[in-house]
Each structure stands twice: as structure tokens, then as C-alpha cells.
Length: 374
Ligand code: SF4
Ligand code: SF4
Picture 1 (tube, protein in one colour):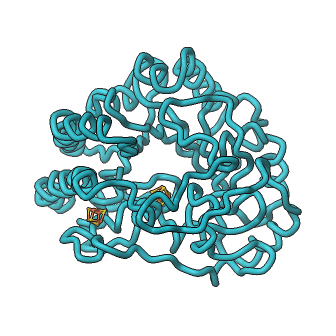
Picture 2 (cartoon, rainbow, N blue to C red):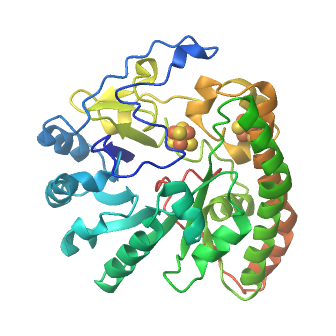
């Protein structure tokens, strides 16, 4: 089982698209159509006995912990202790990359995967995340790799109206500062009001959706030369299209990937703070394999591409944060992704048959912090 472990809600950055301090000021879930009862008060920092965590993880045959925040490296002390003491677990770190130098080499080398938040070239990244962030993150990642880190490094982008998706992804995959072998992106689809909704809709239509089609063309160009680039929204979904597999919610929330909150309670996903009705257990009383599952419901279950999409996001599925018109715009981006990949599927199958690429080229760890459907 995969678990996000929230070490702290504190962060050393203030990115323009961040949800804000939901631990102290939870979103007003009852403003939507659900009238959910929310009690979001949680300790800001991890506040339970680590021995309880270790006992909980021992009951799991293959536990994977993703260190998460806030910014988890603000509690690099806890990361080091847990990596040293959680016997049998595997570890992933999802970080903004500003404090990677705080991670001792021997601890960094125990991480199988490192997800680093970066949004594209310097101007774009610094525009979203703050002046100087791009260079600091790139320097830190380079230093880590030069110091012997050999696990997967995933550029984890947040994508909004300022993003040229084709340019940003291809830049992160090949540039002079650090070229990421793996890239994942996630839409900032929080419309935040009618005005922004209009901007998002126009951007999705004019820039994002055509950009995805162009990116798929770039991906295929490299595939014809034998390389399957690890661009996660394509990699995970194409593997399932090749194998004819249906997918549950691809981020794994509520069925394969849970979040351990700072008080030890277990939520389906890290952002479902205080949504206690959906909580699935507690580390002191639950077993990892016996956690409650939380299904996707509503319109998704009748959607023609549900088996491809999986429902995109459990949090949004529960909260209904968008008007019907806005939901269709977001779902339109998923349809565009689906159709773009379906169109190239026959050629991918030809490349597999002819041995230019191999099935193993699509292998990756599921539920590794990439939500897959942007
Ligand atoms: S495309 Fe939209 S409606 Fe269809 S499964 Fe995905 S989130 Fe649900
Ligand atoms: S995609 Fe939605 S449900 Fe999945 S981890 Fe992200 S916020 Fe949670």
C-alpha cells in the first residue's frame, strides 16, 4: 500500500496556486452542494508516536511512504529518523526542492523516487513560485545526483494559464541546467470564480488541448527512435491502452494510496483535510490492508471514458467545485488526452511488434505521487 505521510503543513514558499493553509482554515466544504461537516483542525506538525507508525507499517507486506507536506524537508529530522527506523518500507519524497541540501546523502540514497516541483523554464517557474526558485531547485537536484542519488527524479509541474505545456515539458526534459528523465504535470483547475473560469476555458481550448496533441507528437517522434519518454500522463495511460486494462482512480486515492494526517488519522488523499466522513482509519486502530475504500460516484460512472480516466480526482468528485459548464471544460481536457493517445495507439502497437520499443519501457511504479490524469 502507498501512503502519503504529512510531516508538516508549514511551507517555505508561497506559490501562486497553492491551496493555502487548509490545516488552520479548512475550505468551506459546505459551500458546495454536499453540505459536508468539516473539522479541519489538525496539528501543524506530525504529532503522534512514531512507534505507532512503525507498528502500523509492519502489518503491510509492501509499504511505501511518500513524505509530503507543506514542505516535508522542513522536517528533514523526521525523514531521516523514519527512513532509518521504518523497517521494510520504501520511500518517496515530494518536495519543492529548495531544501534538498538538508537531506543527508545516505538518507537521500534510500529514496526510490524524488518528485520535485518545478513548472518549466526559469521565467515561468519563478513567476508561479517566486524569484530565484528555478535556479535554486535546479542546483539542488544537480548536486543530489552528483552526490550519488540514482533513483527516479520526476519534475512535477503545476500547469495554469501562463503555461505553454509543450514548451514547458520539452524544456524540462532537455535543457542545460538539469534534464528530467521523468515529467508529470497537473492542471490548476481551481477556476476560482467566473472571471477566471472564462480565462481557463479559453486557455484550455486555445493552448492546453492543442499543446497536449503537440506533445503526443513529440513523444511519438522519440518513440520511433526507440525511446519511451517517462511523461507520466502518457506513460501510465498508454500502458493500460496497450494492455487493454481498465483503471480505477489513477492517483490511487481511496483504494491504493492513502494519506496519514499529522494526528495519525488516515484520509483517502492528502488534501481531504477534515473531511472526516471520508476518513478510512487511524494508524493505531487500522491495518493497512483493511482500510475503507472510497469509490468515485456521480456522473463519472456513466462517462464513456471512465475506464481510462478513473474519475480524475476523488476530492473534486466529492466536492463538486465547478459548475456543470466548468466540469465539462476540465473533462474536455481528459477527453482530449484520451483521444490523442487513442489516435497513436496503433502506431505504438506497431513499434512494439517490430521491437523498436519494448513493453518493459512502459513500466513504472504506480501511485508514486503522480496523479496521472492532469
Ligand atoms: S472525464 Fe470527467 S466525467 Fe469522465 S470519468 Fe473523468 S472526471 Fe469523470
Ligand atoms: S488527484 Fe484529487 S484525489 Fe487524487 S491525490 Fe490529487 S487531490 Fe487527491
